[in-house]
Length: 205
Image (cartoon, rainbow, N blue to C red; front, side, top):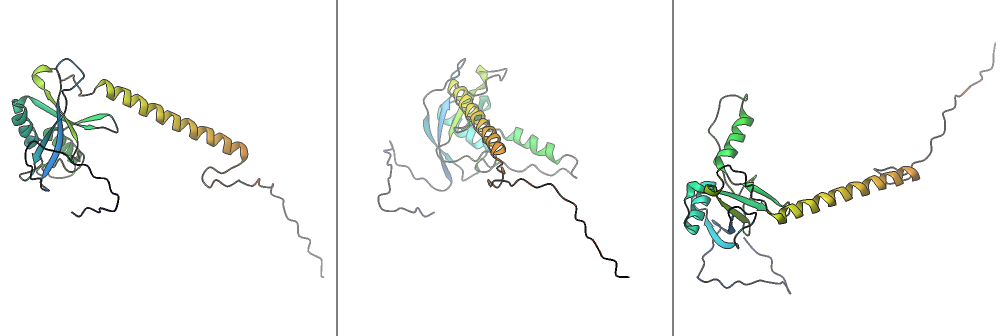
């Protein structure tokens, strides 16, 4: 991949504790561990995921388990969508269950597709934040990965959506009062009432 660098382009450099050899098969992630009985995380730490053997949730879980010295079967992981303040569970079995449900009634059952976290609906990429939860501390699975900051962000997005809706309604009312068409933005002309036409034909007999 070629990077288009131009004059006065700003670059950022990071000093790493050890030499890194990154390739197209690696994803640089920020992982943070969920703190039990709280809605917060430990500070994020950088982790390199090698996807040369696949970019599946199982491989990601194993890599995280090795990094944090945890049991893989006790882990649940989720990606943070920062702009939406949402967390998406990275779980292969639940995704395959949804695929099978959509295929029911559409002929013979086929093998489930192999999940690739780089593709939809996960779209895992460099710089993404992945939350890690030890289900031993959440046996009832009530912890949804969210934080107080997520709640505040969602309320902000909700308020912005309501404000945009209100502005559209106000503009529509103004346009109606001024006789402006909402779609074209041009002022609509008042149509005159239709008048019947009478034609007098002379008698030529």
